[in-house]
Image (cartoon, rainbow, N blue to C red; front, side, top):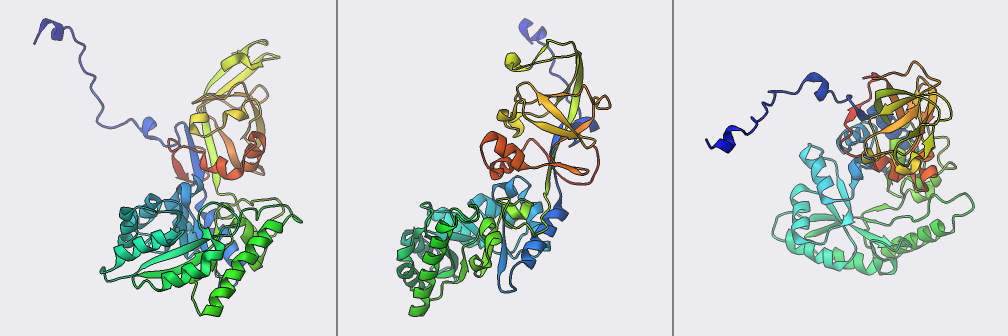
Amino acid sequence: MSAADSHSPAAPRLPGRLPDLWAHPRQRAWVEVDEAAITANARALRAALTPATELMAVVKADGYGHGALPVARAALAGGASCFGVATLQEGLELRQAGIEAPVLVLGNLTQPEELRTCLHWQLMPTLSGMREALLCQNIAAGSGRAMAVHLKLDTGMARLGADWQQGPRLVEAIAGLDAVQLAGTYSHLAAADAPEGDEGLTRLQQQRYEQVLRSLADRGLDPGTRHLANSAGTLRSPALHFDLVRVGLALYGHRPGPHLGGALPLRPAMRVRARVSLIREVPAGVGVSYGHRFITRRPSRLAVVGIGYADGVPRLLSDRLEVLFGGRRLRQVGAITMDQLVLDATDVPELDVGGVVTLLGEEGDVAIGPEAWSETCGTIPWEILCGFKHRLPRLAKDGAEG
């Protein structure tokens, strides 16, 4: 050992296992998922459909932030018969967890290795044209089984899908491929959540889609499963249901618009909670957090909470966020930071270090929904739900305070 080595600090001895406090999933902040609510929502949605219409549970983006696997299992228990995902990896996650129900990959897969993986794991890719159809034919030919696919038609979204007017030609061409099975033909609604009386685009898309279906029937061509409706379309009109509806937001207990599905008993399934890590007693005139955008106007009791924008709490909510404690609302003050935020707990003396506050979800008879956050931030509830990062553990709701 050299002289320099003899003065080097010894490497720290790491513990054999983490202390229980460190390993506790409710130690800092977490997301609670009410799987019973997911099942109840699926059951309510299923009951609103005819027996001939299937319910697809859309579990992309990790189940809209709720956790794809628990959502998938809960949705199956409520009557969902198949799943929609956005990416190949999301589909593989379901298969590798033992989910055997049909899975449609809603995003475009363009590489042969991706489509080969779909065939192996029996995932259905979305086709937007003949290029992908011919790739599927080449990959599946000689494998001993056909590759099931869905053809997407663009009826007014200008995103994925072939031009709707090319639909009959494409279905006919795909029918001529002996290793490809057309399991479905679908489109996606661009404005089904529009206010009542503003239904022109949805009506136009429905007319275009139905025109394709009539043309296929006239030619004796089978479109497979016909589907058009997302959550908004499902709640807007049974005329949009066809053979299957693809439900995302409503499955998680939220309506795409206040005018949609009012009679349906949907239950929010997510609750975001965090602990108080420090209480500060400060006089009037003290600036709080970065930039001192909030200055106390009275002697104040401030509660520091271990959650921030790196966890998915938008910084745009700074000084406008409220949280729940004991059924009461507390105001957040100062700038929301990466890992922490501050509450004004002056009028809630019972809130102390270790206390648990609810940022999103229900507490007793009071609730804060993602719509409240999205309206403040100028965005949509979908983005709020999908924004909670994976350093927040997803835990089954059990009513515990930690």
